[in-house]
Length: 475
Ligand code: SAM
Ligand code: SF4
Image (cartoon, rainbow, N blue to C red; front, side, top):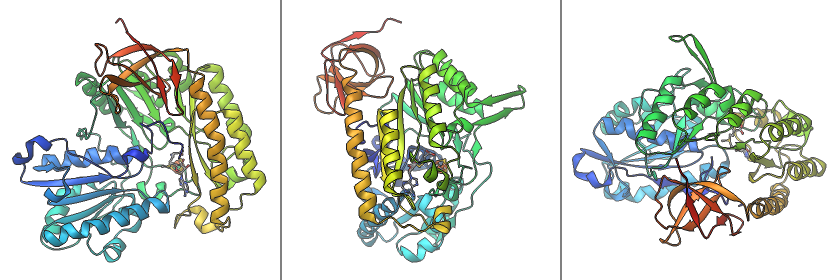
């Protein structure tokens, strides 16, 4: 797939990642847990909340599944393929259970919520099923499972945001961190399972978000990504200070922590992103000039069936507005091919919209019907799989041209880059990111992780920019 830039909302390279932040302190914990995460960035952020809850109760993480007393798998339900990956992985855990009968296996997240207790029958080796709003009950559920009973908590909440839990940063490079600002979604796009698995939308206390970002900055982090399914509908009433905090105001508060702290956010729903957000982005140099604005389809007819609540023309007007206020803004999207009733004409409309928007990055999927969603109940999944896949390939081929052009446009230009660490291929080189979230490789010289440098781009591939020389940024 064309997911060449990493550090994205749904990062293929991170799927199944296992964590061990305290791996050098293996003897200080009474028991060890192993946690693997799948799906979007919110799931990875949730695993950090889970690690914090377990750590408080004396459980330490291990990256070695063989050393674990507890195995957790934080799951994704967004497409059937994501669920099949998890089911396959669960069968691989069977052998560990055979050699260690007291080993407990827990399924967390969206699949736990979607399938509930049914999971226990379908996957015999599972001992715990825990939905995304029930992580505080994990220590109790572990105790229950230790007695040999199956433990389930899939209650969704209207107010749980885990605001008071300081997530333990897992597998972090010490520079970038994800910060959840809200949970759930109220949008009900007809193809999407998220409102059913993650519940109603609720915003997290603004002060707790700003404090978490301040602490991250003090620990040396230099970039935070504010996360939510629909960040632009963030809304918090601060009764103490008699203040209503919109997403624009929240972003401003985070940007004001320090000009050295970069701020990113994901995901924006086209219907909700406001001029106020765009003007706030324009006002602060440290708010990255980059918007992930999923469109899903270029056909107004399909968009209506998807219940996206905007038309093609409305979306184009929004893109024009972004370019008017932020002429140099990077733009990415999500696209679905082969949604119910999609014709060749609708598909061509998606391709022509991509031509118009000229996205720097696109995440493209073929439609996967999810049980219980509005589309599954109302429409027939009538586009044959080979047609969905052929349309997807055409879309990928088109986007490949746009993304390469986007990289080529950067050759010869100078960018401010935040250094994230050593290049994976050569330890004499460093790797960092531009404002537009593009990876740049350049000589190490005397520079260090977490510093900013200016680089002039000499050449590029489809996924990476290269520079011969970096120059330090004066404070
Ligand atoms: N909240 C975000 C939004 O509205 O754009 C994204 C949520 S979802 C986790 C990420 C992407 O998965 C969606 O933008 C959509 O393109 C894709 N997706 C969701 N449900 C899907 C389905 N049933 N089949 C294929 N792709 C799907
Ligand atoms: Fe799903 Fe739509 Fe909510 Fe995104 S906005 S999580 S696609 S329902």
